[in-house]
Each structure stands twice: as structure tokens, then as C-alpha cells.
Image (cartoon, rainbow, N blue to C red; front, side):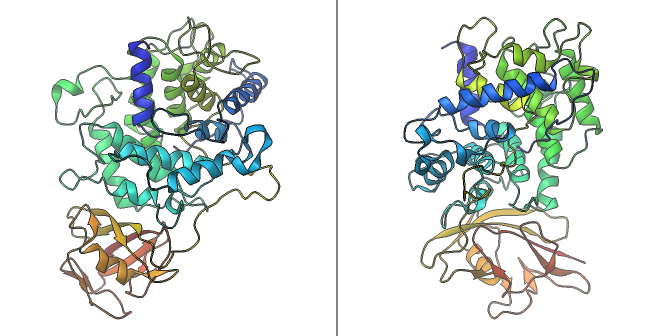
Length: 471
């Protein structure tokens, strides 16, 4: 395996990926026509279907092809419709959900990107990431890696990609109703870190640059620039924002006029082009017009389609390769299809198969986790944690969650005290900060409007809970 391929595959395994803005109508100036893109999607989906194992799986131990779900969804194919030999009992969605729900997944030494990758691909497969099972909540799993000493980072800050993909997963893997489930205060904290790590040349890299003039002055990476752009836009930053404009300028400066490829750090390749195009897609920037239509009439989408074997449908990694690569085929198809790093799952064609699946209730006696943020409204550090508790019924209460958080939260210190300590009435104080006049404790569940927080507020399986003190 070449150094370039090894680095790419390592990044794909360790990183996670987001919400896509499909480019459904291409202007006349685009050089890859809608018909060419449609053919590329059809053939690409055919190739990705060939990657399914006989047991229905895409993901397994070690390096795997689970990113295929993000590409399939972007191309309009539901994971539940992908079956080995027509055996619907082994459809890709069910097999993947069962894997994520298993006690042995992901490993004995997990990292935050394991859960981010899973959240993005579960969402694309039509599995609610917060409700994989009674005990598996991928949103809460990600919350566990919040860095209390460096708010806004997820996982060790040196591995900046963990924070980028946290933004992609937490904002891109929405509720089944399409609502961003995490509160604005959390999005803002992550966006601050994303901005602080933008290099002087307008791009980003996989490692932390914030606070280091040397790293900020170092050359950026095409791949990570695409991912970081997508992370910002998925977090609500408009594509007219100065940081997005600078990122576009960086990518434009790496565009090769004769092919439409980006001159990536380790050379021209499909994966780098795919990540860059997915970043543009996620920001609503058409990669076939304006800055990305070269003086020789080529675009990044042209390059990707030129990398595809037809009718086989696979994409080669390097222009000189003579056969397809699974990873290049996933990245290439997702980008050509107009996707970011995840996509809303299509409505299945399999009779009786729902668009979404997920656990519908807590299971009494089965330990679970819930994602919790606490904002005291004083300008202090936001508290973010995963709360472990064992419910006694199909639902629990906000009071029970806050009580559990005092001793069973990761990271610790999310909740140190709550008043009142019992009953079902209004919450009057959290972490020593009490209601005062119009400033009272309120709660939001799965991105809903904030309302008065009471100990008796019902909390269900997989609910993402935000409590804050404010008017």
C-alpha cells in the first residue's frame, strides 16, 4: 500500500463525516451534464452494492466500507434496499444497526471518531443515531469526549479532525423530523474552535493549529479543508462568511486547469477531490461554476467522473491506477451525487420498510445514556456530558437525569447540585445558580423550544437534553 493510500485509509477509518445540500439543478455552464451525473450515480451505486458481504454487512472490525451508506443515500438509494442476493433479512441497514447495538462495538479502546463516523452513517442508513437501541445512543457517546479544559473540542485537541467531525455528526445527523438536536450554545462553542484552527492560507489540516503561529502558517490539506468547510456550514455558518470565502479561495488556488483536479498534499487523487467537493456541496457552492470552472473548461466533478470505470461503476484512487478502490468509489460517488458527509435517507422501495428505524422507549432495568448540556447563562463554560442511568420504566424524568448526572456523568462535573432534590416541580437551581426574576431554568429536548424546566418533565429514550438559565 502506498504512503498516500495508507494515509487516506487511516483518515477515513479514524474520521467521521455530514448533511448534504444536493445540487439538483446544474446551470448551463456546468461541464458534466445531468445525464452524465445520473449515469455516474447509477453505475456507482451498482459498484457499492457489490461491496456488500454475504452476511449483509459493510462494516466490521478494522478497516471497513460503512461510509458507503453516506454515498448511497446521497445517490438516492436506501440502505434497507441493499441486500445480498435479494435476502431482505440481511439488508444493510438491519445488519449495521445490529452491529452498532452490540456490546463489542466499536472496540475496547474507542475514540471519538468511531462514534462520529457511526452517527453520520447510521443517519444516512435510516437509523436514528440517538436511538440505535435501548442502550446505544451515539449522540451521548460523542458527548462523552467533550474537553472540559478546552471547551469546544471533542477528543484530544491535537486530533483536530475529531472536533470537525463532531460538528458534522451533531449538526448533520438531525432528528427524524429534520430538527438540529443540539443547542445553539454547543454549536457556537464548536464553531469558535473551527475558526481558530483555520490556517493563514484559508484551509485546515487534521492536526490542531490554534495557538501555534507555526502550524497556522503551515500548508493546509485539501481533504480537511472540505470537511471543515462542511462542518462550519452544517453548524449554520453561511457560505458568504469570510472564513468560507477564504476556504473557497484556498481550494481555487489548488485547482488544476487541465483536469479539474485539486493539487492535494500527496498528489492528485479521487479521495481528496471527493472531500473538497463534498465540502462545497455542504456549503451550497456549485463545484461546476464560477471559481471551480477552470479556464480550460474543467471542473472537480469532471475529474471525478473521469476517474470512474464504466459500466463497472468503481472509481480509481490515482489517475494511473488500473482498477477501482472501495474508498475512492465511496468518496467519488458521494461528491458527484451532490452530497456532503451524510444525507437524509431516501424513502425505501422495499415494501413495508420505513424510512427510519430506532428504539421507541427505554427498557426498564437496561442501562442507557442521555446527552446533556447545562448553560447557567452567566457566561461561564458550557457543561456537556453523557449521563448514565438505569430507567425503571419506558420513560424517565428530567429530575432523574439531573440527579444521575451528579455522579454518573462523563466528563464529570456536568451537574454538581440540583434543587429541589425531589418532587416534580420547577427546577429552581442547578450547580448553585438559582432562578432570579425573569432568569429561570428552562429545558429543550431534541432542539425544541425552551420551556420551564420541571423535575417531572418527561424524558424518553435517546432524547438530547439542554437546560439553560435565561429569560
